[in-house]
Image (cartoon, rainbow over all chains, first blue to last red):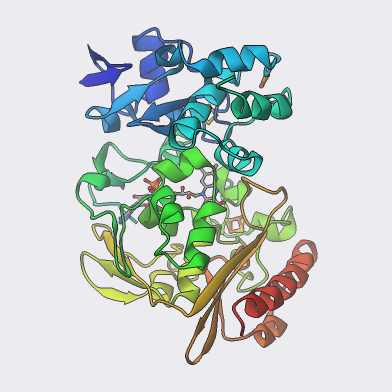
Length: 144
Length: 267
Ligand SMILES: Cc1cc2nc3c(=O)[nH]c(=O)nc-3n(C[C@H](O)[C@H](O)[C@H](O)COP(=O)(O)OP(=O)(O)OC[C@H]3O[C@@H](n4cnc5c(N)ncnc54)[C@H](O)[C@@H]3O)c2cc1C
Ligand code: SF4
Ligand code: FES
Ligand code: FES
């Protein structure tokens, strides 16, 4: 099957039931996408599918063969990455790729989100370390 | 629900089905991507079954009760993925069922929740299976007097659901190869959805109450109170509830949310 990730086309063999997260990490070596709960609860595995945040752990790879996938590796130069570092918006960092992917879709649609809009759009990205206030600050000040 | 026979199942957003397949609670050796065959998008008061909750949440034409039910459901990523058709057909969140206990809904002869942990469970129709239906969307659509169009027939949303019994443990009355194609609602004068959760965002409803006002009165639809989405003719019907020791609090919640919802729509 074909898979388009960060603008690049890949050919891969994927067995029935393979998740997008498995394909990204194990077949393509794009290990920036993390898997934590593996069942749709935490948001660690968030990637963009046609620009909208999706959970790659419960997305079957065969369902996205004709769509554009963006992972954290494709957002390397996004100003949000610096904003997260500047605001110290991480502790262990495990949730961070998913946070940045979700935040990138938010600021794309709404460059100056209010606190409430940030909380609504980021509600599906849990942070075990509880860095929420700093994540919010990083998103509020992403262009600074 | 989306079974299509011969080990084939229909997959829409996969947010419910993929975890169930992985946990061995549903078996399939072939999946059909329903989003390529069922309609999606909003056309007046008709909603394609493949429309995502995110699309509904964002469309100002959609009545407040349904928009709010979508907005408060699941998480942003899940709303980008999950469809309205799949939402109506989502499986119970009862942990005994999800952990594959041989309970009544799995074909066994006991309800583990009735005797065990049942804080999230039902206050109506709970003597056989005490599970509580998790769909916020279905509660809103009940209040909005929705009809469901399938590849075979069209009928009221309430008719999509059934209570389980010894002969049939299904909560849904849909043929193996029958697909939901569209949902139609009646435009209300005013509507609202109120949801009580354990935290402010990103949780299933303990109780959800939708109210919609029409010429002839206010219609109510509830989530989290019975094994299937539950319609109330009026708040007086709450007197007929049969709460379990652990769910008595839900009756109070339903009463309070019900009063607030009715007041909010000017009923
Ligand atoms: C962690 C989590 C939290 C959630 N929280 C909430 C919540 O708070 N409130 C709420 O209301 N919901 C909640 N949900 C449910 C979520 O909204 C549904 O899982 C989603 O809407 C299902 O849609 P889907 O397209 O992903 O369905 P799928 O998972 O693809 O399908 C679900 C079932 O429906 C069948 N099916 C799908 N479409 C059709 C069709 N058109 N015709 C016939 N059969 C069909 C499938 O075969 C399958 O059996 C939550 C889900 C998760 C995983
Ligand atoms: S409430 Fe229903 S699903 Fe849960 S244990 Fe009882 S019979 Fe099973
Ligand atoms: S790893 Fe996908 S949601 Fe938790
Ligand atoms: S920084 Fe550790 S989980 Fe978020």
